[in-house]
Image 1 (cartoon, rainbow, N blue to C red):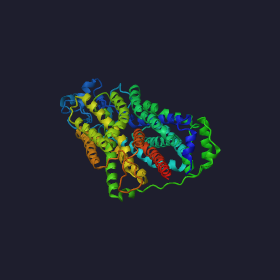
Image 2 (image 1 turned 30 degrees about the horizontal axis):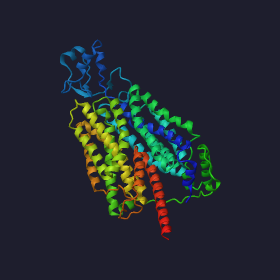
Image 3 (image 1 turned 45 degrees about the vertical axis):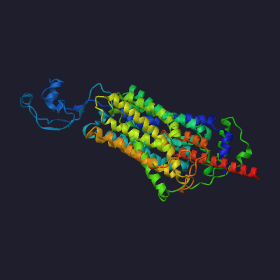
Image 4 (image 1 turned 90 degrees about the vertical axis):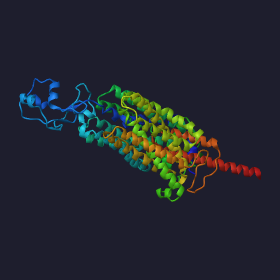
Length: 570
């Protein structure tokens, strides 16, 4: 044993140093919420039509209404067509008035928007007609950036350390976030958004992992809950910020600048002592632990520091291990499906906030506020009803709500928004359940691999969700029908999974499950697992560390109990 756990207890579970780390984690959590959903407010729905100013050359005195009547065809609803115009001709005005125009074509000279409309992505880059799909494609590219970031910065933080990766990610996010506000072309915008997504993933994973590696087991629940509730608060702040700043470039600047405050805390941002020990840098770890103890106004006995030794890296199971046993095959496939459909419906509702008919700012505010009780309330439902029932009911409920929305007329936006909020509540709570359930189903030797695979499935769903919205051009109900059907099927599949409430965590890939015991300890694990599930891209590292620490403590208590009982018997 390296003794790093005992030394950290002497340093202090939740002293001044740990509180500073929790406060630092607030900034990236707010930043994640902004970058995740800010584009929704940068592409407002505004009226537009083709630019037909060519006719002004022959009719300079025409009113705007006369110009539109002469140059734009009308649709079946009597409104002017937005994506077509009458082909320009070389006639004089009298000939045009006498014979009219019949041949139509696509807009060739751009579009005209309301003059009072503040600059937006839609008006500056003409995201209309043939290019309107670029909006959802850009959101999918951002989600792909999140996936790319987790694949790059996760291994990089294990190689070069937590602190350098945090600083690199903060610098990238700040520079490219500000750069977005000055891009001259939409394709450049999409490329910058991909980089921002990757940096967001790197910051959230590494900052929260660093905080968790410094904070003691007993204080992790409240620390992680404090930082992760900021994700929901960040969504509410975004609603107010976007309401007050309608210019999309200024909004991007306002949301990107705060991340630079990180650089004011470079001196107080420590490296992970646990990471230093695993890399054999014992002397650096000792100095860092002594400095941490001084910050927390604690003293470290020299003999305790001398116990610090390099840890042997424990080799985890491979991906193939998940498919060698039949029961693990079932667990892997069903849980991957559950995570996929959970992320699918969560982002399907979150990214559809502009299409529910009610004010988008109020809807975003409600969507953010509802996540806080959803996360916390999940703790009690899991304790009372178990994992399998809770996971099944929440997934099915979120799906059924989406299916009901497809049947609500467009002229009832309040009913649609209320149902969507209920669906967001169920999807958020289901995410919390997924983390608990997955970590208890996968044995210790393959837990990190299993949860990582499930997280990968969720990220793929996040990429696909904006693309599914493109099907709405054929019928408005198609996307929501898909978002609703998937979680219903995924929820029903969860019925085939075993219940894990009150059971010990499995260590190997054997088929047997140990009997339930020490429920008090299990409930403490449950509480900790639930609150670490706000943002799935940050949770795998935190979750694994906590599970392994709790399991080690549990085994030590159990061994001590057996030894004491043997001594009494003798």
